Image (tube, rainbow, N blue to C red; front, side, top):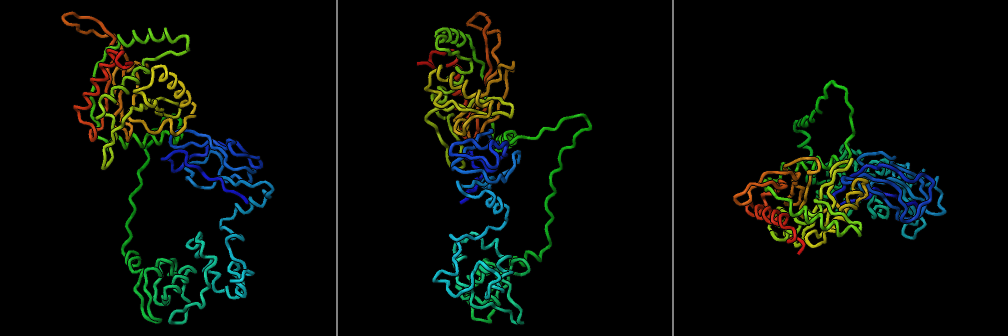
Length: 467
């Protein structure tokens, strides 16, 4: 029996995706675990593996197709020994065909002597032919339709005209004792549908039932409301240009950051941090780790410092919900990584308790796979706080946008030589500006200040984060 291959939900937030590339073609044999396609989700481009074995009989969605809904059929898989050409033919049909398993046959004892319910031309079914076709959308998928008792008689209106009703509505009317001639239909051309019958009570034949379609009629009688005009696209200047289609990742970034700035009240707190002690410790550690092939970056050490600071100030390691404030027991730090398709934030889990060498190794692996769109959903979804470092670009200070539902993000600028005062003496030190963006619904300014103070102390006296 053929199997529908459906668009998978490759992330909890995925509702639709782009079928970027097929890695199989019609007629190919696949087995469980084979990579069949690359799918662009709202976060990254991911590989889609086969679950069942068989032959690709028909590809229903060509590669490059956008906005494919989760759960939509994208291909047909024929089982071993099944005729692929017959699968293709049935896949083209818009109306599902009843099979032996779901339609009782006339040879069954219960149906002996009755017309075949699957044949609209059979004797006794002529009057149902039109209704069966027009009501297919309402009745399709109900397991009890196939075995339902045929309506013994076709109700007629008072003037002798035939009452228009779907087969499902007729069956429900027969069960409830509702006279269809006394029910007004809200379906196309006044057809009586399921909702009309369910809204009507049992009444004696010839009595007028409550008009279940009255609200619909009243609504139809009222003047139509003109739809709101669609937003006009921005006028493109008459200048030579190149238009690039937005990727799903870029669309998601735009939507989430817009929501963050519109819905999350940001408060910004900035501190200047001396880096000399951290740079000295980094040089010593790299010298000792050289034999293991590990080289710490400044960012690795800042991730560690933020993780320890969040555990020291748990009031900032939080998430705001409409009716709860969630306080996390550990610090999972999302690190902003720029990729060709947009920004993504792989997570260093348990950053507060991991060793610096472990953070460095994990960060290099995550960043490399992020740029190749090879991250798994669990590697970039979640996190309790974020860090964004633009120091390598020479940016000295900036404000970052919070990544909901997290409660804060730390923006790190470049370290530069600045004049500093040491007691009564003027000196020079390597100083970095760091700005924390906090969700003011969840984090008070004083708590945010405590976190920034703890972070600065850990960076300026870095042995504290290793204890």
